[in-house]
Image (cartoon, rainbow, N blue to C red; front, side, top):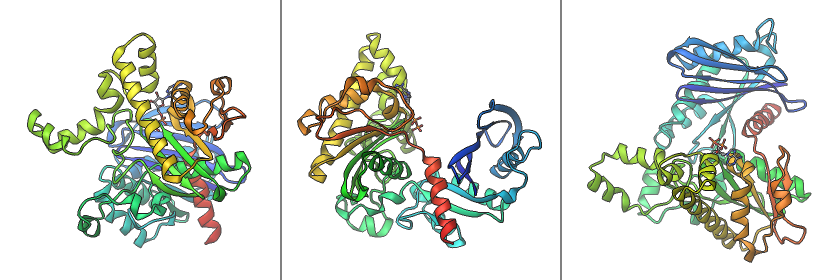
Length: 400
Ligand code: ADP
């Protein structure tokens, strides 16, 4: 069975074609700058060189059409006809309260995704464009929506409600939803398999730290709290996002700096976090290098970043009254030995002990970086959201 996974942004389509028998990626790539005469298309068959071309691509439908042409190309293609694609897994950012799991796309599902646009105005509209483009191009395939928010729908009210007038929840669904759910689910399952215990017996804290970052408390296999909120702005300090701040700052800065609402939103989402504090970069690798060269602002930004991350992990240990596994994933979590080391060094009170040699090993596999004496297993678990989406799609196809 072949499954195409697509992730659509406002001007991009990221795609991967999976062969589900061995869960291998057969081909993958990216269409960027959709809506322009010089859109960039990359295409890579596994084991071969990446190919890149520019073309006029005016919308997502044309973009996907080109992707399918490449996949079926006589010389470099990997499928002979569209019919070989059994299902398409669509990443959908926000499922609101409508979806606690992935769903086969029907007109009701599309309608519910549309109703959630207010909560994710930047993400859900391009996700919907991708869905309609793929349905047009692949009318015989099963289309499945996999939501970033779905895994967190198990959170109890005490975690997901804001202490605002309750009517804001009932009237406008203002609450915490959480994101990166597909990743948190995937890595927590991987971690449980690695330690050889059922996830249903474990207390796991999953730190997905990339450009966007969130920590999730997973008790007995279900998400009971997560650091992102109604939008992905809440929680940790991130590459360009501020995370938690006193909400009173917003009207104060608007008045003092004479900003509009959209300007302050842009400030908090795109010009804060590591970038805002360093004034130089949102990229953890670059900020770490600058710190090593003696840049004081970079050092401060990293200290703030680590402190917030550590506090959040500590809060979730308290919330769950314990922890069996702490895991790190995504760009920073998988690659920054420094961030892992510094976070864990200051969690020794909880019995967390890192083995420096293990922590310095680079690998694409799940690995343990805690010492044999550590009360808590600390793991690095490479995430794979695309594979998780493909698995979810396969499961729904198998059930249908
Ligand atoms: P996204 O949230 O966009 O998917 P990623 O998960 O790819 O992001 O993470 C990107 C982040 O990972 C960047 O800040 C990048 O600097 C960081 N990163 C990647 N490799 C390293 C490394 N070796 N050391 C420190 N940070 C790294």
